[in-house]
Image (tube, rainbow, N blue to C red; front, side, top):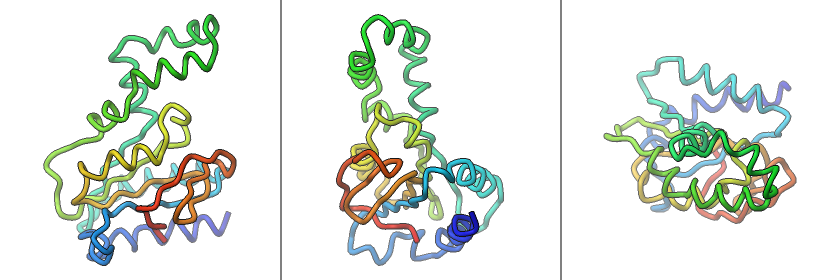
Length: 185
């Protein structure tokens, strides 16, 4: 537990750095960063994010986008949220997954994530990626975000492993390859 707390304590210093905030030093890459952590620390990480978001800063402004909350908004707007249990029972989980992926597309997620105007000092926190699996895959979401958020750094909080190439959710599911992100710390 002490290790995760030390890692979390380093985040504020990292996202306060002017070079980080301006995406400098990334070889013209989009500023996408992954904070990987062991899944067993999910509640500790959530608590830290909430405290950091609610602590005012002159250096940065955190914009959080919780992928699970966005999924629920999409399903509620399409008026299918209440039908999910019966649909799964009648048609099975594979059918349900296919149907929900048709409704909750990357574009639908991205539309709800966008905000304007982006300000110097903004940092986009992408949370809830474990809760939304397998409906949305992290590497696909990051790909679609590159254009819309090229001027602000993105930090994806990832319950699993990221070695600079592979995303392995919950240290178990190969979530995909993603080469454009950097480890946050």
